Image (cartoon, rainbow, N blue to C red; front, side):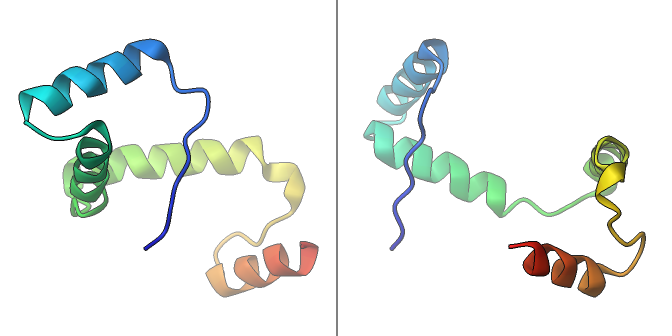
Length: 84
């Protein structure tokens, strides 16, 4: 299994996670694993696809100077790999 380290976590967030973990009778680590698993496994729905597309459009606008291909994801991945 992989290990993830989160740095510079806001104290308020850390405290809220601790409260939530105690409420659910889990360790802080187990609570964070549960939250991540739930969020990653959420299906993309019509409700959040619009938000995702808006965020993607904003990202592309902010990074338009990178000259990434407009539509071809394979070309985009190759361009990113070539830059590394």
